[in-house]
Length: 112
Image (cartoon, rainbow, N blue to C red; front, side):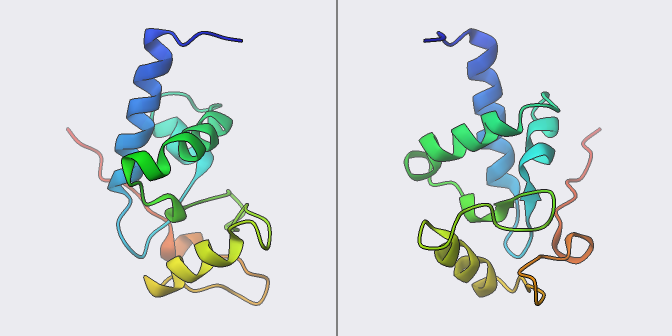
């Protein structure tokens, strides 16, 4: 079992901070969150953070999707809940259950 390093923990905390910034009615994808947190190849670590910390940290987990604009959760394993939460915020899905990232994708403001 890999032990956490200080750098791992700071990545974890950066991921949490970024997810908290995703506004209602917008979505981000796993790789985008990872890149913003400083690890462009850390999408799976973002998934782990969401899995382990969404409830404890009260994260808007439903606003994180895959880069194809789709929900990654399977039917009967959270898919319907995530879709309903996004639709309640005004996010629209096409006939293939994809979200238009040009319209609903989150682009954070670059801080100077």
